[in-house]
Length: 173
Image (cartoon, rainbow, N blue to C red; front, side, top):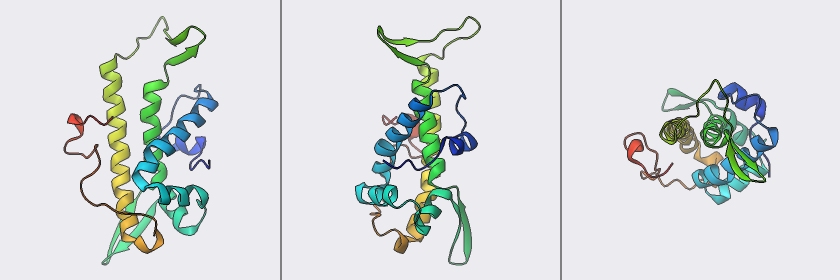
C-alpha cells in the first residue's frame, strides 16, 4: 500500500513524540488510510489516489493550495493535513500502550501522570474534529474541481458523524 504522507510531513503538520516507534507510526498511517480515508473518498477514488498519488490532480489534492470559484479565491490545506490529524487522534489513544508477552501494559513514570480515559477521549475527539474541518475544506476543493476527480461520488448530505454542530454528542469517535 502506498503511504500518502511521510513522517517528516507528519512532524511538520502535527508532531508526535520523536521517541514513537517508526514501525508503529507506519502501522497507524496504514490504519488511517484504510479506516478513515477510504470511508471519506469511497473505494474507487481511494484506489485511484493510492495508485496514482503523483498525478497533477492528486498531488494538488494531497498538498493543498488555492483554487478559484466564480472569481473568489479559496485556500485549502490539503488531504495530508486531514490524514495527519486523524493519525494524531489515533496516536493519542495508543501511544502510552505497550503490547508485551503479559498483555497490554501502560508505561508509568515517577514524575508524570497518565491522562484518564475521559481526558484521553476528549483529546481524541478534538483532533478528529480538526481532521474533519480539514476534510470539509478539501472536499469543497474536490467538488469545485469535479472533472479532475471522476471517481469521487459526492453525497453532499450531512453524512459525517463528526460535523461541527453535533460533534460532542456523536458516538463516532
